[in-house]
Length: 210
Image 1 (cartoon, rainbow, N blue to C red):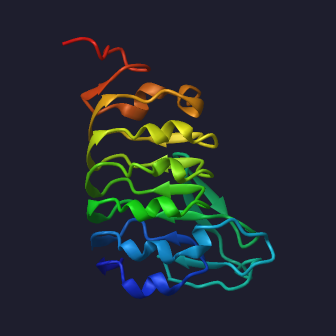
Image 2 (image 1 turned 135 degrees about the vertical axis):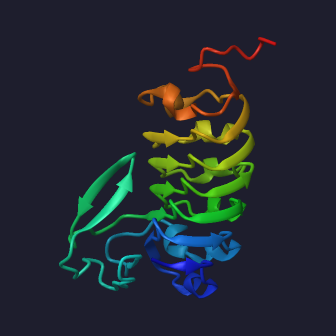
C-alpha cells in the first residue's frame, strides 16, 4: 500500500498510458502537471512505445506488447476485467479508493485519449471540470462517492463513446444534461442517486417543482 502524495516525478513518464494506484492511502490533490502524460493526450498507433505503472509492484513496461506474463485486473464500466500481457493499446487512469482531495484539475480534460477514468471513493470537492466533454474517447467515467458540488457540465452530454457513467453520492445540483449517450445508459437512475439536488429526466423530480 502506498501513502503520501502523488509524486510529481511520476509526471515525467510522458508515455504513460496505464496508471493504476487504486486502493491505497494516497492523499493530497492531483498535480496539474498530469497534463504531462502525453501518452494520454493523443491517440497513438500500436507501433508506439507504451508505458504502464501498476500499484501492486509498480512495474514499468516499455514494450508495446507488454512482455509481461502476469495477469492484472482493471475496473472499468463498473466491472472488474482480467487482462494478460497481450494488451496492445489501452488508456486507463484509476485513482479510486484513496484519500485524494481538492478539486479535479481542469487539466485532466486534456487527456483526450483516456478510455477509462475512475476517481471514485475519494474526497474530491468543488465542481466537475467544465471541459470534461473534451474526453472524446472515454467509455467509462466514475466520479462517484466524492464531495463534488455544482451542476453537471453540459459538455458531458457530448461524449458519444460513453457507455458507463457513475456520478452517485456527491452533492451535485441542478438539471441533468440531455443528449447523446446520456439517454442510452443502463439503469440511469442509479447513475445520479445520492444527489438530492439533481432534477429532471431520468429522475422523477421535475426541475419546475418547488
